[in-house]
Length: 303
Image (tube, rainbow, N blue to C red; front, side, top):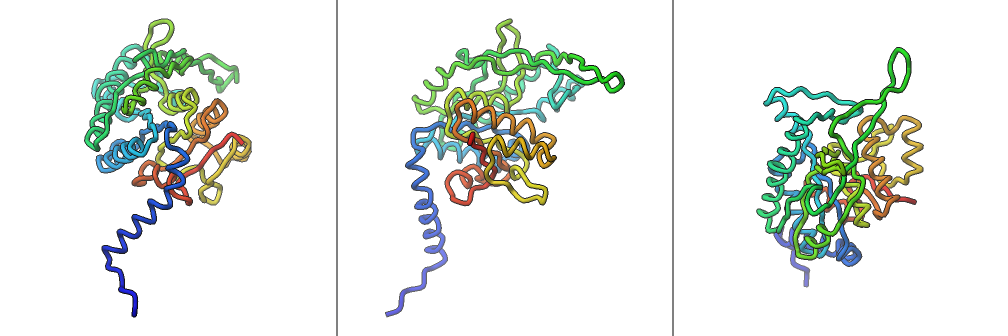
């Protein structure tokens, strides 16, 4: 007796079942663990990708993983500054932030963007808690200092970036409480300094520091590229800090990828198990990276 030919519907169901079976060992290994996800770039401005992202985050929570989202918002801040007639200046990719710009950045990041992401997650069936580094003493910032070389004298000069900060201390108590209560923290990269001033923090830097403080199993940096590429344009799937140093020395890694990988190296050397750079424009890229053997981005481990 011949076996019946499965219908197209049966084949789709079988493929879904096989995907779940493939994911099983990953589900077992990481149940109860924390993932920190930096969300930003073009993916954040695409409603369909935003809905996919929210579903992915809710799925992680439903299967016993604790996702913590840190979001950016540079383009939205830039658009608001332009609308209000405030000019922006950048040094080494960081926006020089005066008091007025800092207030606008906090309004956009902690207000419109943060609550929009909270709404997407709620729409996907999750319970999200919108926060900034100010809430619950989560992050205390220190002022960022930079130097720039004078093109004529070649003398290093101090550059005042204004109210641009970086995490100095992190108290994860509010995140621990939220995750234990079944909520998904969504964090805007704004924090107060010991001086009482409000500082704008690069979202990658914020996410990396929080991942290290939480001892997260994964830090995901969702970007606008596939990951780290070699000189032939092929994806490099696994890197160590030593690999990254070599690739930067020979010019394979350059530009905006350098600070992202510096964030990854800091995170994995400070307590995060591994970091991943991947393309947030690919639907469900985070799930493909984590729950399939082929992966979808560049994984960075301490050794």
